[in-house]
Amino acid sequence: MTLAVSDKEAVREIQELIGQINVMIYSLGGIASIIAAIVIMNVMFMSVSERTREIGTLKAIGATDFQIISEVIAESVFIAFMGGLIGIGISYGAVYYLNMLLGTPGFARITLRLFVQSVSFALLLGLIGGALPARKAAKLDPITALRYE
Image (cartoon, rainbow, N blue to C red):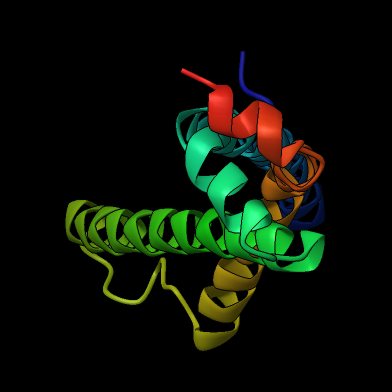
């Protein structure tokens, strides 16, 4: 049994399929973003924990809460930036491989806009992921921090 499908119906079905694929991709990207922010936060909590004595020393010699927060957030943003660049590098490889596999150069591509958005989003994740650990570091009591082992 053969079904006849008009061009309009075929285009509508393809557009619907592409829409569903986009929803899945954005959902996976959202989940990956949440996980990335949690991982960055975990790394920064560990960094603050390992550098408790250093932070205590800085506070004891007069470092302000803003300076401590700035240092921790700068480290967090740097880690996220490097992760974003590595992700973009892997994406370039995947796009190249996909285009070779399909035999259609230019089918998938990474534009300058996409590059800028990706790096900006990575920086935002670093900022969000570093905010709580930075606040914890700034609130450390210098005397307690210097006794920390």
